Image (tube, rainbow over all chains, first blue to last red; front, top):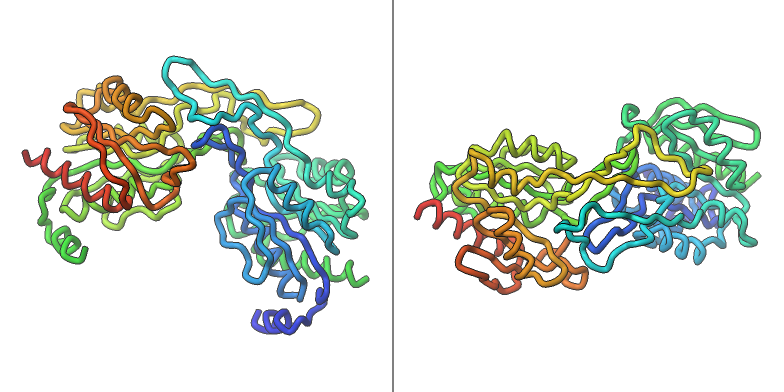
Length: 228
Length: 228
């Protein structure tokens, strides 16, 4: 790790001169001034990936929702709350060599978000109207400024490979890092991950390992492709 | 502070021999295995109150949702996620001299919470059916084992005194600590608070001060009543 840091500081390493965008963390979608919809992403895997890319010499722009873990030292950090804000930040930063979209972006926002706290008194149960959030991964993949390598993530709770393979085709990205986030796996919010990498050649099942190890392996693979 | 800690350790202080229940933090109400509804309570004010009570010699049972700040050292901590779980924990711990209900308990839970991650594919927008959560403060106030002193909290964004005075009457509690949590105030998630204490004699407007100072003043007032 020290050698990696020295390499990075010296601008050495296989990703020297490469600029990579990483998104990470959950998004928070407001219901009213005090309530919001969140998800259990801690930001640990996205942060580990950014650190691994930095250690290989890349310049990293790190667009992050409100995560539990601190952002990586040495990255250009852009903090956002909502999916809309994350899309804006990504659009401003997508002129990169690769994009890794590890954030757990909310699929929906509350269309009827209130300026005032919704009161409980006498009005019965609230009715929340939802609106679809922008699909950041698909938007980037379809844009003229699409990075040469786009890596998406899929958090599934069943039929992981089938869902993730379909997602890769639907979004138009190069790879999907898929994992099973069922509560029983302890992955969401935990320190380990158990991923399947979906590429154009099929599904590569990685053994369960620490999120840092997953990050190192993915960063290495990104370096091979960008230098290939 | 050191003198307070020594007093507490020696079992001295005006709240020596008193047992106080404090609830704190937000609750998280699941939508599916990865999504949930949350609120912006950091747990800072409830935690500060528990610390202030401990420093006056009280025994404190601290029932907390997933807060941003660590729980107070020296309290009996019970960690919960949902309003239902918080009610269960409070029921098991309400045989106390006073209860301070500082938690920002969700008014509603998702009645239709899903065992599987709700998929975005092709099914349109989700429909969330809500159910009313138990009213923990009103339940405690109406119970046979009601503590001699019950302090509720009101987080408002408009007409703070009117709403909080009505809430005091409706819930049947002794005091309401009311504050304006409009985003512009910076109170929710911040280090300061600006409260109005609603009692049987009216509204007492406290100057804006640190959450620790609010906690110290409230703990002092609780000690006066319990010893009065």
